[in-house]
Image 1 (cartoon, rainbow, N blue to C red):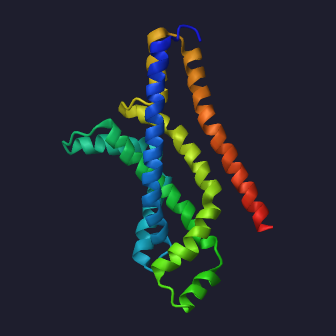
Image 2 (tube, one colour):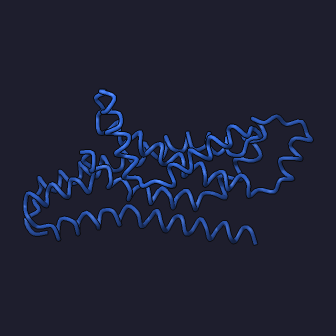
Image 3 (cartoon, helix red, strand yellow):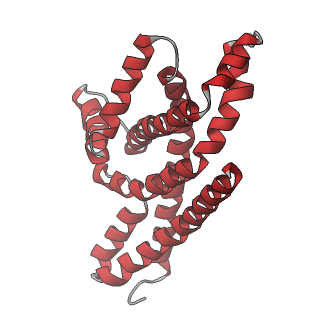
Length: 216
């Protein structure tokens, strides 16, 4: 691995740790808010549907890099000191909530309307209807797409370095500037990303195949 020594490897592992933490925090946080977005998008209130539709359009229609800039530097314009970790966590959580909300919205609306109508006819109120009837089926349908988004989110954390957050790719850049051997450094970084993303991609493909077989 060229001049990559133990200290450089440890620094890469530290960057890897923050990559995994950022991915988990933004995915879990985005999942919580994404569920609220999905429920709002499928509600009977037009105002909620319009607001969340605009929210999704903003995050899906603008680059993630720009969203990071707006959160980090936009807050700075308000004379508020913001830690890079807090900024990127907030930006990635908002980004994930928009995409997961739209994925789950599609899954909810993919279910036959007769199920909701039957639940209403039985007098099941909204909370129980969503918790016990609609969401378990919708989330099952959405699993392949959700896992696919998780892979994209994991790779997308590399953009966090633009605001000074040191994750895996930023750690690789620092090491490359120290030892002047970009090829082995970025090659190793690429291998680490691959080893994280490939099992998730295989898992998502198997889920999709299993669900397709169940439909038949």
